[in-house]
Length: 614
Image (tube, rainbow, N blue to C red; front, side, top):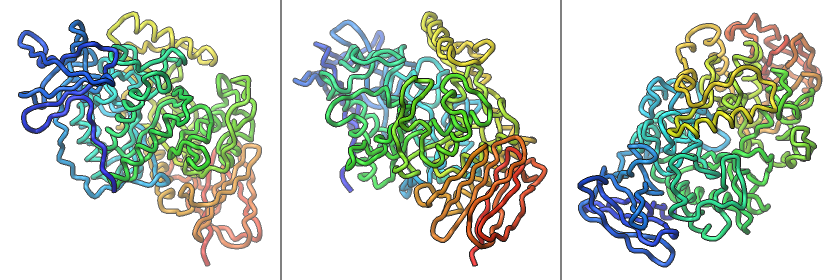
């Protein structure tokens, strides 16, 4: 093992009653730290080096002290590397005691192929909306069978209601969720329950309110544009310091908070035309940190480019990330079950989309996209299946609908069960969105808590523009209204009532099958895919284990045939089982095959068979 990285910027208590302050601020001539801002404040000047780093050690300052940086004697600003903002994005930063009594010394993380991800928004996951309250739900998640919790972004954002993508203090865990100490308690408890924690981080933009980074250094550039304003400066003048800032942030979550992986938001909006892309440098840094800490850590990218270079290795000019989100899977399943064809769904109609995404990773792999009016993506069938994260719901695909409808509000119970089977019997890494497993019917809406009325109005206008290419009808809930957030809270009591408890039983059994059957482990098994006219079969083989999954995605009964050779097959699971609220199962419990397996499958039903070993 190498030497683990430690954070040098920001406020570091030295253990002797003093604190070192360090900040990169090349745009500032003079900089002071102001302790306990107010009538009794104390001000200390920081020395500047040639690279624009200001530093000093202040005696008599320890954890829980509040401070601002005073820029050029005029403006008091929070620390760009603040580890805690207890009074919000505009308030003073607080010195944090980074020590914590961890109990996870035996934890080594989880292999990528073993990830079964459960995405949560901390603020709406429980009535309290805190890390500590989420700890009380860990036994439920462990019982469900997931192996990793994916947290939507927790970097300090304005107010108390936000998805997290408006964060402006990347190093400070949201104070209303419980701050840094609350996050550490959550991660430690998750590891104690055998669950990994993946954190969603945003390295493509910062939010519009409370973003003071531009006053310290050239963090942003106008050479590229993003939907949220200026892009982050990863390849222009002074970009070395910017790259260090965000790579430090990634290492900070892995090292100081024992986070097991990072999900990188919308990496297509990270612009870098240098010889070594920022994402490659970031991935290598995080993996090195994991080696030094003797833990398995992952870097997972979200991208709408369908670019397999993200997960190809450096030896073939890839970025070497561990996995990437695959929106094509969601879109193909969504269109097949809902029939929606507006917006980007226009590219995913027809009988072939699900077969293509199961067999070839992407639907759009260099083919023409009607939505984009050009070719899109690149072939990825050579890339291992455990490099792709798939889902039938997530925060984006639910919350970026005008009314925030979940799948349970769009399709029948039979179709929900079919979607679950497509997810967990796919050859990829599955992710489910909080409440999906029991068919939560409350919406997940877009919500913000900005203090500026003009900014709130701009968000409302932006949401209306986003939906212009879709056929969604009805009013758009006001993102700034507290009611919008309250409507988005989960109602977990549903899980104990019909038809929700039956759907939950199916999710639990699908996850159990996923974990017990070696042939369903992504990247390990070979997977053959056949399908047409709403019928699909997947055949998995690994280490002497052979499974066949058959799906009828039409509303009527269908005959499905697959060449399997001679032998006996036993039914492992069927979505129309009475245990899951169905009237069956209607497929045979055992089949003796001579060359081929033939099944009559009811509409919107999936069935899993396992070859008996002689």
